[in-house]
Image (tube, rainbow, N blue to C red; front, side, top):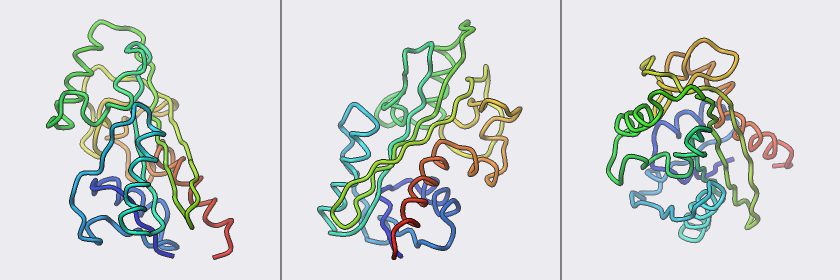
Length: 193
């Protein structure tokens, strides 16, 4: 079965394809020759995931899914949250975002955080939502070179390696995106395709 993943983020695309394996062929927006930005103007992860999935579904009339992910830090009242990708400004880099978080967390002892992913699936014109989260703490400085986004400053509970120090195999078993994607995959398996 082929399904379109409504993202321009090649890291997410690779991560999701590894998690679902070869039972499903994940089609990228690049495969559809679509390189425009998809609107993300909602103020919740659910709202943005649905907005992106609906946009691609309406444009290409295909089965598709989209995700939105946020890092929620307790001491920052849930920030950066839905603004995680552009926390340091519209044209910011992963580095800029991490620097801003680390700067805001200076001197704060409560470093509890969670990553949350929401996946919105549109299949045969019906909408479904899948959520995954992983709790952890914000490190005081970057550690590791794997992964992307905030991975170098996020230490998942029960582990002594940041997401950026872990092997892709381990991260893809325990991450927020892995949990949401496994729920999506189980749902797809439950359908008799």
